[in-house]
Length: 506
View (cartoon, helix red, strand yellow):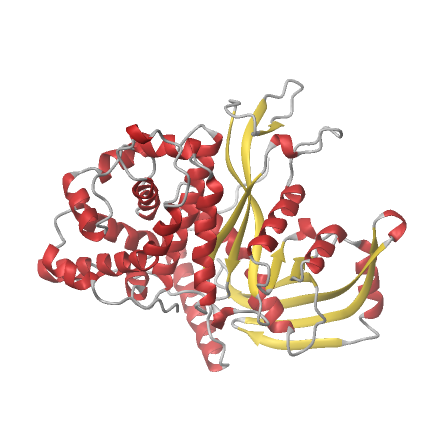
């Protein structure tokens, strides 16, 4: 029996923490002396409330609510005008609420980050909350029951709701809201898949299925999987764009294969081209999409791409890269934030695919090797390393490799960060809200649209300080609780709501 390792004492643990902090301070000073600028966001303040009096808190709450409402009201006329054109499936004699009011109610349900239909019923219909909502949005004469919205989403044509979302993004693009964050004059769009929910009940025929466990009698699990597309910018701004739900019937029935990400990508890329026919796009994809048909589809659509190239993918391309790289030494070394980077690339690598190699593409491969220093738990400064590789649709050079890799391809993680936000930070991505396929998709689209509005609020100059002080969830909760309590003075709010709102993204 081996002798157990000696356990550190309390004094030794404290001394180790002090040494770690001391080494981190020295490392930060060295980075600042060398001109390296940290790219990590500043932590949230950890102090007591900044308000000294009730009057100060009241003024701050009115200011925050009015700015959020003005942001929503700036886009609502065009949004509601489009929603009014949606065919209403309800019987005219039984309509108590306008279709636009129902959809606005559903949008606010996710803007305020309510976790369920039951919670929305309980909270939003309180007299004080209703009075404040009517002050902010005069279109709301009365709030419906959440089940009324469910019945509408169950029967409505969701293509119109998604088109309203797309038109909102198009207005932002035409207004040049994102012009400072483009990559080689292209809009960076990331596409990735995410599981929405899973269970052991087949409540809709569209559900995908799989076997779980390792024994012979493995139970069947049914799940919903969504292929998402989002605009992802290097400043952290992520704008949800399109959702493509995978359905069991859309698979290959002859091969007994259900729907998959690559099949969903074909449908999603067709919709993306139809909705944005002339938009210059840079697609950022993970290693699953490093194959000839996907790249050929992108090039035929006139899109650029940056695709993760894993070591096991495209062996002929890797063989060509390793053979040509010593003969064509094209490199760039630079410091980027805290990291020392070395880029090496080879252009015009020929890749053949299809039956007998009938299709051929010219690919460009770049590899980034980087290192950085950090302090480990033993208070020692160690050097960490990483390696990344991408396939590029455009030739690489010293002038564009930084933008395409660091500002573009590396920020593909933005869509995955968006998934984490929607799943674990208030949007309840993994909650169905309704066990009906059409209604479930409708709630999903309303959630993604609300995420757009909250993201714009976070990055707009008017609300930037509030989100930096309280964090995203804290700022949304601050606005929500301000609407739920008698904080808002109607006379002052009417004055604040008449002020113009200029969307300026930071």
